Amino acid sequence: MLKTFLKPGWVLMLIFVIVFSWLCFTVFAPWQLGKDDDIVERNEQITAAYEADPEPVDQIVDEEGRIRDHEWSRALITGHYLPDDEVLLRLRPVASGPSYQSLVPFETTDGQQLLINRGWLPAEENNAVPDIEPAPTGEVTLVGMVRRGEATHPNPPIEEEGFQQVYSVNTPQVSELTGTDLGTDYFQLSDDNEPGVLNPMPIPQLERGNHLSYGYQWIAFGFMAPMGFAYFIWSEIRERRRARNEEAELSATAHDASADSDSTDTAGAAGQATSTTDSSESADSASQQTSSVATAAPSRRQRSRYGDSKPDYYAKMRERRRER
Image (cartoon, rainbow, N blue to C red):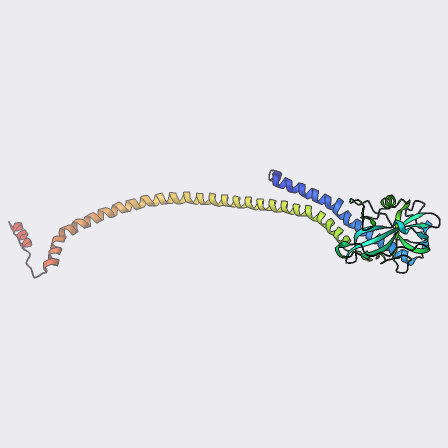
């Protein structure tokens, strides 16, 4: 039985089951459960940000413009835009199609420079840049939600239609393009009434999605794979036991049939001897009957042929001979 499960097919199936279950428990399930945790954390932070009053910007980010506590927190920022250093985030989908987002450096009253995402406008025909109203030049106070800076996009920045354009909100890259000293993270305007806002950036829907159920499904798959493999092994063992039992029954039946055949042959031999004696006796009796019939046959044939009305001349001759 062990040799059966050492064949390449069973060994490869075992390796596949082990690798698949390991991936389910260590990669796929944590991936989906981690996304669910991130969404739950994001929703909690957004809810907390709107429930709390905006705080001064120095309590939201540190001296390097890096988030102190939580993303999505709302900050109260006072200062002025640097409209001459505007950069566009190129063709980032918002709502139902590609858009351009306005990224403008902002200098606070404390001299700290931060990047502000003023919002978005839909791209025009052939993805052309729309008419973008410049940011105000005077001192303003605005409320922005702090966001983490994005990684550098593989595509390099381009200059087109009079604007520097980038593919990700990466503050070091924007700093290099504009010659400013921007903080690590940035702020986005999400209210229609903020100074310099275009179409405000939409807030993510506070929905959890299906990531939790997907994570549980991968855990279930991780358990089901070895269980299915064990079932196949049990089925193979059961089938082989059934085949052995059938072979044993067939062997026993064949042995019984052979014994019955031997006894039948012995009885048949004795019966054949008896029948041979009977047949020899029957043959002698038949020969006697045949001779008598042969003797009487001419007269019977003669009577049968000529009838009683014909004289039997041979009989008369035999009588004369006996008289002599």
